Length: 429
Image 1 (spheres, helix red, strand yellow):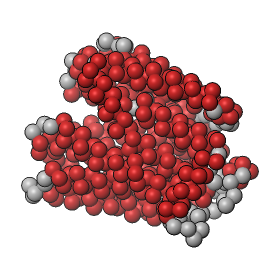
Image 2 (cartoon, rainbow, N blue to C red):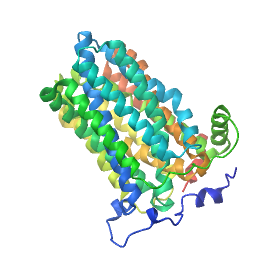
Image 3 (cartoon, rainbow, N blue to C red):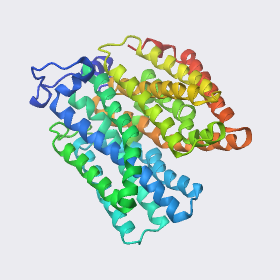
Image 4 (tube, helix red, strand yellow):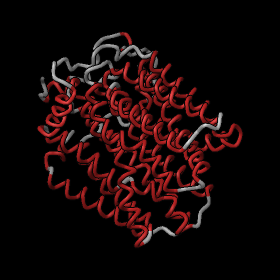
């Protein structure tokens, strides 16, 4: 296996197939990845996929409250049923993404989500739904996501050349953040009009549309690159060794973990903070969440507009530090006037961090190892809900605002410590 820096620089170059050829029409630099046919279908499939996930979270949460007499603990259990597979199965999904055609993995897992959601709709419509069934289906959705996401992210660098990778990942993140604004609001309206069962039927259809978009992609039909005779467990171990041997990749893995522990717990604690500080209702919480989504969209579109960025490693660490500072400032807010701008900047900084970190992980990993490297970042999606537990317990003791402030301080401290412990990371181009 070759992992030299020369190969890492060459691995994202176009391979000359017709699906990656650049058409003659010109697009603004922020949308340059849409020149590639396969990327357009991938982006649309990703948009549908995350739209379905966002709508399903709200609809499933409403169904949980109906079945359990408004139990917040039941909500937490259902969230955990989805998060645990992301934490523990993502590396298996990454290893398979390096063995099996990535397009096939996305297609099968997305179709599986459509089937599970259709089953949920039927159980709900026939009044056969029980709480334990939601936990089982949540585990199924989370497991399928653990297979889907490493392939969905790593296939991007199979479709676009290396010079366009940051733009492509940023545009993909922009689509995801659009669904964060639109999906939950749409689900809320549909629940009133169609009830939860009818909404689940529509979500199953959206999952199916995502699978159809994936089926139209030409790239990713062949084996991803790993042709060793070793077993899956050996592949997973090799993935960890590969990242540990390279100080840049090791730094990127660490940097993906730190915000998951200290930067994102505010999302889980935001409803409690809003009730304590602003005495908000559901519409007020929607406004706060929409502001985060708008900030995220602004951030990734700004990143997508950049043709080239120097010293990306140093920028990533500085971004994490500033994110912590803004989180501290947000924890001190006492009105909408100050809270909304602070949340907009938190959303902007977090989205830029995640997109840039993913870009660097793909740029500095070889093609045959890319699925496993990306899956290490995917594990953080499962850690995020779990990391909110200690800060939630702390909030019970000292208040949510002070707990969020401590999270911001820890994020600043770890970003500053990382800057000095990993000096080579500052020079990452």
